[in-house]
Image 1 (cartoon, rainbow, N blue to C red):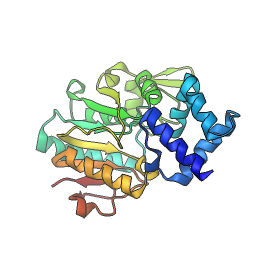
Image 2: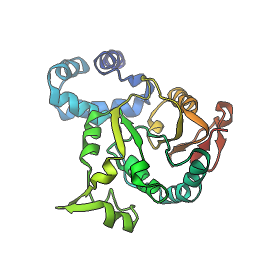
Image 3: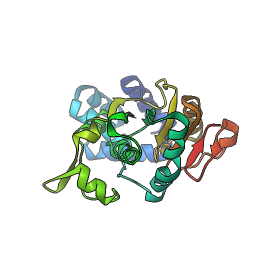
Image 4: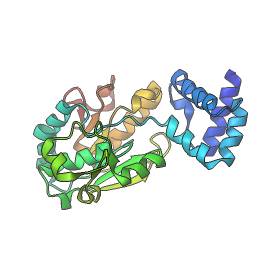
Length: 258
């Protein structure tokens, strides 16, 4: 079976450019095995063959292996710190036309939260967020901007009233918020990184990567951030060797570039 999985990883890389070697193998293999069983397919070779010919199966696979657990204003205390400390510092250093990247943005909860957080300090027509994810399915969901009550439970009440409209049991985010975000596909482990960012936000995704892959991404983020800028990571993550990379630790989840 181990040899079969090695074959599977190579075939998936050819098919998608997703390198499964960069994910923790035990977790990822379990997820894939469950998916194969769910579809009543026998063996990795048959599954690969099916992925090549069945678009619905292929889209399901991409959606399933990319981890999409997201919500607005996740860890509210960290967003409060952004509001009181990080955004004022960024505006003081770089002005109001900030260049911000929401990496591995999932269904859009995070970049839309960023827009709302920034709107307390900057007019909406000056806010531009670049949001990327590996999974085109979640990007499509993000562009629609429809969320359940649980996803938006952490949104401040004034923003809920101002920027969300109830549609049946769901809530649709307003077009004026959506206009501030540009979505595109990006593979953190394969694609080139743009530079000159004032802040990069990448939260609760790298925990699924190997230590080597995490280090590579954090170093690339450092190179992409301007001096005086920030990296905002998730509550489940830490950069153990942040000093070696050049970061300064602002608090538990914000790292600065001197």
